[in-house]
Image (cartoon, rainbow, N blue to C red; front, side, top):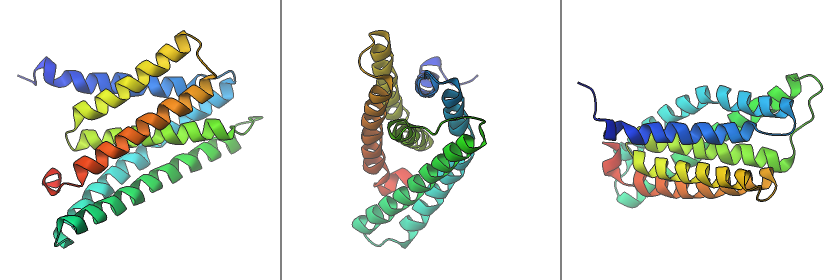
Length: 190
């Protein structure tokens, strides 16, 4: 017998929410730009998984090497910054590569590129929280972001790129705070 439905539901909502956020990133007046965004995000999941593994390994090494709680928190924060920066660099490189390889495709605007990177932070930190068992926090943040963006699109509130950047930026900020709070505790890594 598998897990109870109620135990699996947050994972399903997380998947649906992040799927909606990626779908919204792919919605644009320019089909080539939409396809490039979706392709870059899809291809970035390989580096994302690698860097999730690197984060866990680096955090366990910091746990073994740290003599104090403060030293462990600093080591974990450095590890988080290094892995998240690595993921964003990979996502940006993929976005630039898809732009360069796409025939007659204009380069994305700064606002659109910033939105893509902010969404990358949301996705990567959401997966990180999930890997440490913090399913409800990541689900709540991603669900709220997907709902906010859905409502903005349905009511035609603001420019879609501006709304996306605001929604992704707010969600990214909250999730990074959740990651720092949860993963700065040594008990989360055992």
